[in-house]
Image 1 (cartoon, helix red, strand yellow):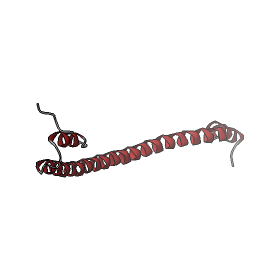
Image 2 (cartoon, helix red, strand yellow):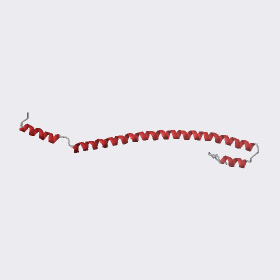
Image 3 (spheres, helix red, strand yellow):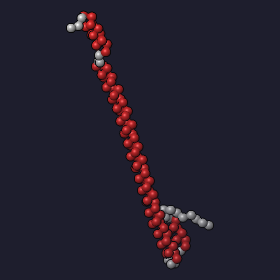
Image 4 (tube, one colour):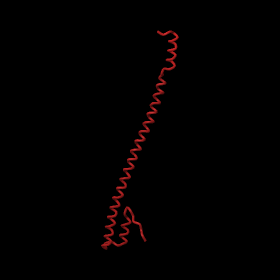
Length: 109
């Protein structure tokens, strides 16, 4: 067994070095805080990747839509010119119709 002096030293060591509820609570707070920080970073990184992907896809879709509309605008322009050439509409009417398109033509004097 232990002597009284050894028991006293052992009890003093335990009292000095034992983990208290307050110590555990503080450790739990630090761990939770670090986890929150790491989760926020991961979530923000994931959101940024989603936003980048979405921006890329929206830009691609816009480009495709503009190309399709330009193609259709060119077809309408050809029909307006053909109608003007056939004499069904005047040059002024043709010019006004061509100005209505989504991509107005430059006026050349």
